[in-house]
Image (cartoon, rainbow, N blue to C red):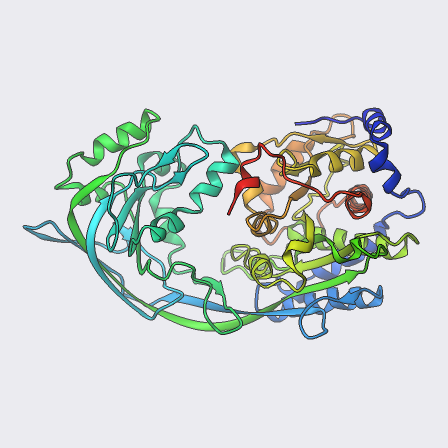
Length: 542
């Protein structure tokens, strides 16, 4: 990764005159600290009750954002000439006492105890599921030509239930491994499987005990609906699922050529176990209940000035939802205000929009500002837009995503997740360098954050993207920015204390917004659109 000082950035900018000539000076316009504060305090106020997807509070937030876009004179970019892209969601609940798991060994029928030995979730597609099929062990259940992996090689899983261990091989790079891990259902469905059983492992038990997963069992799942009312369930043939506790999982291997104890030993040794028929079958049953909610994305466009390039778009995104009200009755404050997550990101985006509008220098490419719903429910609003864009997806040249800039210290560096995968890394470095800010390496690569925010659905559609965040270095002598950032996560993340009375550094917010604006300026005015680096794994996604 690249580290750029202010002087280094100037030197690079001079050597790349083609880019510099196309990027207007930022001297005439700057973010306003009071404007950032006003936006954040409104969006994170108690009156909005945590902005949960589908809630009245989030509707108010969406209308506030649309009103700000309108006041700036930005063009509506939602549906039917409005700023809103209204999305319908299906919220699915597992019916009480409906889940069952029966194993047929050929000699005996063994029932697994729910939720002590296995858990399952509701179906977003059907109300009743009853699947009986042979079991096939498929190792990690991964397929990747780039990494030479095919856990299905030599196995016939057509019409069968696949059994796989959770996680992924340690030798896989974190971001690429996270993407492959999220594609396990796809790999199974493409090969004709009708169900998936994931095995909890002893290693996983040390990190997140099975009992913790059981605690969240009653939470509903949420999927977006296509305009025709169909839920976004790409693999309808996967009609059964279960997550099995590691000790209970031994029952699945009673007739297996390799016992589960040996499989776990292979995992412990860093080996990837091979697949085989388990010699047993299973019957998985469940009942689901559905209800419908709706929530909007909010979209606006500043048209470009160039006759040709104005048909291309630089896309800024920031999610406006949060997690709503807590059900923890032991606390006096039940409102998860989401000041840093993500009122801060939306505030930066609104100020960036104002700067573009008031800079007096209309960009050559068009700029789209997209406030996204349902990020906390699984990047759903972004995924819906990526499937149903209001402008042609092929004309979106780049995505700059703003999610939870922690504006609690005078940061000296920024992190741009994804910067090593495309030419956007150099763009971010030059923009940050204008303000004496460095671009730092990802300080927590094991978290694979590049696959965990709203830019990721666009990445999967081929759009180069970066996710901009405050770095871990502080300009203040004696202050550790990483420590401040870590304390926020430990004490305030997804808690009612993430609220406007935190010691928010709005002047740091000004710097962050100015960098964000400069990134968009360069992308909007340079001759060539951003591109994936040829060696990047993400340049080769389907």
